[in-house]
Length: 397
Image 1 (cartoon, rainbow, N blue to C red):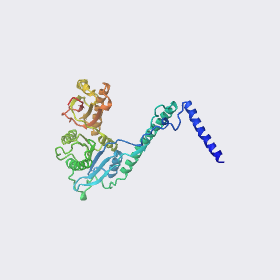
Image 2 (cartoon, one colour; image 1 turned 135 degrees about the vertical axis):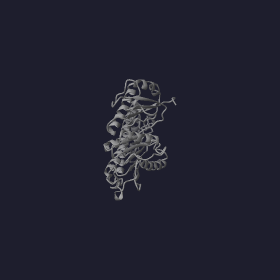
Image 3 (cartoon, rainbow, N blue to C red; image 1 turned 180 degrees about the horizontal axis):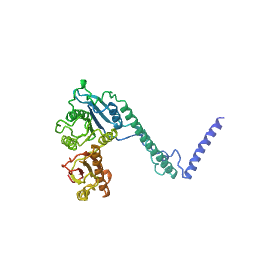
Image 4 (cartoon, rainbow, N blue to C red; image 1 turned 45 degrees about the vertical axis):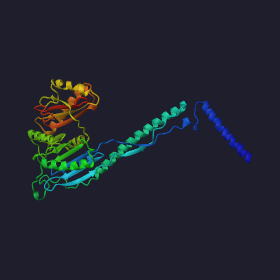
């Protein structure tokens, strides 16, 4: 019995050796050969890249808590620091919270390539495994994005915004129906203090993604110099101010250090406000080195013929590697504040389209609408507004 077992084992071993010989003869490597055991790289994580941002909202009595909750939900982003403040006779913080960071998903490492002397079969198997791996990475990215959206939405829904956050517009939300001492300057001061605190905690990681949304009762008050350095300021009023008053307020905000200032009245919708906030939380601001003011006529979003004389000299600088341009649109015409904002944005888009048609990639252009303002980085683009193109190009500084 013992001899039979040994013989049987020997035959199995011989059969395995014979199979290896046959595989080699057919050009198929043995599973035990070095070429058949390529080293797979270690697993790694995939995640969305979302730069940190900060949103500070100051409310008096011009917005309801429901509208405020809807706005926060519509503009929520991963890695966002949020502060909601109540202005007026007794200013205080209502909300201070940070949204979750983007989710991370672990995916398998990339399959290793076969070693030297690998057969065509092994190379075909490797290519198949790489294709499968790419699909797993793609699925991992999609899952990470879905988890990020879910976590961010859950965070926004769970914020404890009190029912009285917005107050009542008739009494501005203060006891006894007292008139509020709140104004644009006071709200800017309150928001600037909160933004400075958030930025210090984040060690300056917000960059230019700092938005102040101010529900101000009026445009009164004196702004402090350099109080708004690096901030995108959006002011929502309970009334429609004159074009001159709105433009003057924008000028003061820009002089105080805001990188962008938008003043709108009660005609603006929640979706439009959310659009402005989202743009500010993801915007990029560059240092100006070269600029040109593009003229427009009347209420038209079409450039005047002489605009080409302004834009053509900017093309060589924009064609340099790494060049970026901010296309700033302005408007100063009769009509609502939102209509002027859309006109300013349409004018900026017209200039961007001209530049793209002359070989400038869209990725090198940042289009910004400033609304009802004649104020640009170098003064007035024109009596009814216009577009100011600011270029940062290597070698022009």
